[in-house]
Image 1: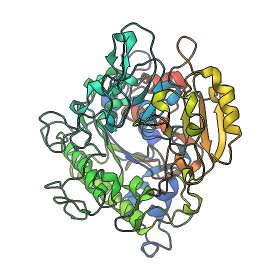
Image 2 (image 1 turned 180 degrees about the vertical axis):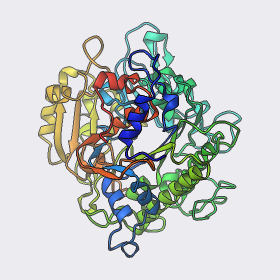
Image 3 (image 1 turned 120 degrees about the horizontal axis):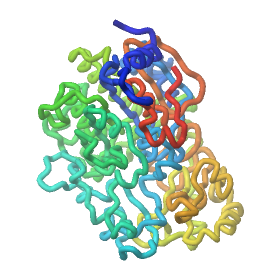
Image 4 (image 1 turned 45 degrees about the vertical axis):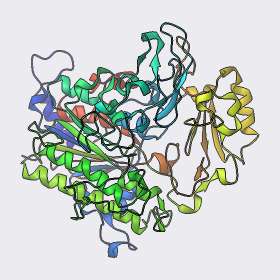
Amino acid sequence: MKKSSLLILSMAVLIAANATAEGNERDWHHSQIRHVLLISVDGMHAVDFKNCSEGIAAINNGAPYCPNLAELATTGINYVAASTSKPSDSFPGLMTIVTGATPRTLGVYYDVAYDRSLDAPKKTTGNGVAGGPCTPGHAPTGTTTEYEEGIDLDQTKVNGGAPGAGLTEGTIASIDAARLPRNPAKGCAPVYPWEFVRTNTIFSVIHDAGGYTAWSDKHPAYSSVAGRQGPSVLDDFYAPEINSTVIGLPGVSTPEGVSCATIRDPGSDLTAWTNSFENIQCYDELKVRAILNEIEGKTHDGKRAHTPTIFGMNFQAVSVGQKLNEKSNSTTGGYRDAAGTPTPALLSEFQFIDDSIGEMVNEIKDRGLYESTLIIITAKHGQSPIDPKFYNPILKTGTSPATLLANLLPASESPNTPGGIGPTEDDVSLLWLANPANTLSAVSTLESNITEAGIGQIFYDQSLALNYNVPGLPPHGDPRTPDIIVTPNVGVTYTGSTAKQEEHGGFSHDDTNVILLVSNPGIVPKTVYSGVGTNQVAPTILDALGLDPRSLDGVRLEGTAVLPK
């Protein structure tokens, strides 16, 4: 029987709680919600959802161009003021969604960041974090940390180079331990992605309660979703490498019936799937197929299993559609104006993800799971700027904070290090200084070059400590907190390239305001206008399943609330 709202669903769970349970424990097996499908459409803003679900005059004759998302909204709560993590990078953005914590508690700031308590990897990563020495028990030297494609055994392969793996089987086995940062306090052991995360996650809580868990994402490094309890809490993990060489995918077709058996866009830059509006859809389709298999009670690759209690994936197609200028065919993505009117290239990506989500919903209905499944659509990050007139690749005419402070940075963070991975800069600049005693002089240098570096705000000392732990080494500081964070003016990106026209990572509205839709046929549709955070998704999932949100470290440490209903 349908209930009137998500609140009633949660109340029913509480009433059905096991009378013998202690404290806040609940008998989650009596919850009406038995499955949660969590989707991140990376880059998708709240205004994108409004435009595509309601329609805009300039597109599709005014009709909605995301009819499946529009249908989910008829039984959903739409949070129009949802904000991502800050920084709005994919790594902290993802971990915020699945933990209920923010970077200050997670210790996760960027996929490429810095840790003063660790030492360099044994072997140089695929993207240039130099290998170096590590002496067990000795004081750490500090190192740039990389948790993306550069830690794959072979980042040119979709399977990440995992020994004996199938063509697209990117999994934990794809990670090269020799390319991971090392911890001298633990005998120079490599720090795996899940060990880098300081908290538990919804996957561990649900797995420990007897649920079946699954996740699909863009890098094997994103096995980080397991959290501090390790990969045993992931019953099914799938991560074909997005920054691998593009290949034909036999047997794979998009929802529109376009075959991916041969490369769709052979004239594009084939060094990564993100270099083409068409190829990225074939890449995302690998994860869509994984979800469809899991709905059917199989593993991502079709083996007999269970329909997961918690499962989901990220889409990259919209993010590529927003950012890319595909020079090989003179096609420009992004938006036409500040109202978020998509270009034809971006429109195609919205239609692709909508068709894909429609396939998932139809499969859920066919399996008789629709009323027992909560569907959450959100995003790890937005993208900035929506208005193309604001885009400013400032290195064409100016400079960046890391360039100004190159001589004060560790070698692995300096833009002057030949062959290095470089500083952590997109439309934000995270700065870890070799000597924190130089913070004030560094800030003075930045303030003297505000115009040249397009600087909007500088956070350090007390202004930094409002939202993050004090930088430093234990016991007096957090080894992962930047000494300085610079947020540039809207549209400024620390690049000189014209291959992109948007970026993410920063604190701006376009970077952080994202879609957040919670849908189930038992929910009366509603729009919530008050501000919420994507960190509230994790406790909401546990609450809907009848599990205690306080089982999450992030909820206990930060007081993260369930989403308002």
